[in-house]
Amino acid sequence: MFGRREPVPFAFLAEADRFRSNVAPPPRQRSSVSQIAGRWLLGLTIVAGLVGSLVLGMPALSTPSDTGTQQSQASQGR
Image (cartoon, rainbow, N blue to C red; front, side):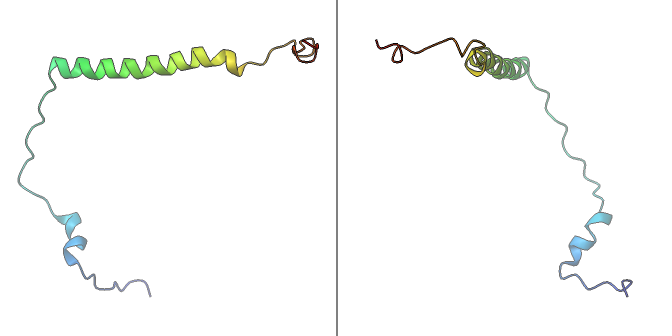
């Protein structure tokens, strides 16, 4: 029942798994020192921005522990 395969309209796709090329790709160029330093600087900038936003945002996310004793100026009649 499942042994027979349907003909594939694009037969070259079916044979692509068996294809091996004898042409080697060109070797990768090595990154220069300035490119490596730029990548490190970009990474450090992104990490510093995330850490800075966390440090500055933490006080806004924390809830004050003494919310029951504080009253606004409007409730005091000022």
